[in-house]
Image (tube, rainbow, N blue to C red; front, side):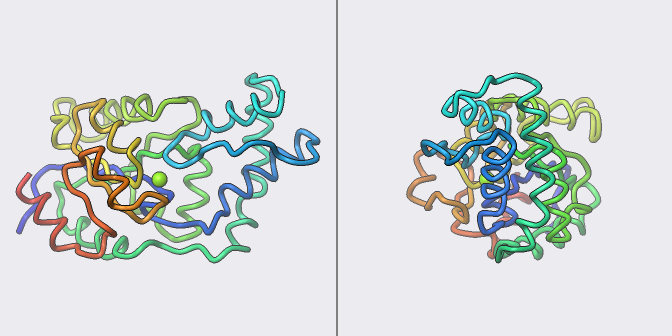
Length: 230
Ligand SMILES: [Mg+2]
């Protein structure tokens, strides 16, 4: 069945790929080594959040000034360590992802983009590691925004620029693995597919009431049917 003009914006971690903890490891090692900490305190939640927000929490917990300079230092340190962390860990492209992207790319009126809390360069490094980066035409990232809804608003603007100035918000589909992904879709009037391949189970995701909820992305036909009917 043909799919008409929709924009699909994919989250990265827990949705397209699992880095086997490489992202977290590179972030935490950078924080420890760049700021001379003996050990890390607390357990700052990362899932579904932007890198800028996570950094802000980590700075606060470790009594580091949350300044543009600190952020730049952590960012640079993280990016320096990320390639090796990815190479060291058994990460993987999540089930169904490649087949779904292949199917979507058959349709000229489907645009693929990214909507992620990752910093832009981190997203490029992660997705290049798994040979997926070239699949996406544009992306909204977590370099500046602390709130995922803000990243979604940037994505909305990018859709206007890259697709059509009058592209309807309800023809944007956000695919993500956390309640925050569904929430940020609502913030811009978009639709949401929630996928339970990250830390959240189907039962965890159901209360956020996504438009479509799946255990993983393997049933490409079922997802395409939802998008064809949209
Ligand atoms: Mg995610």
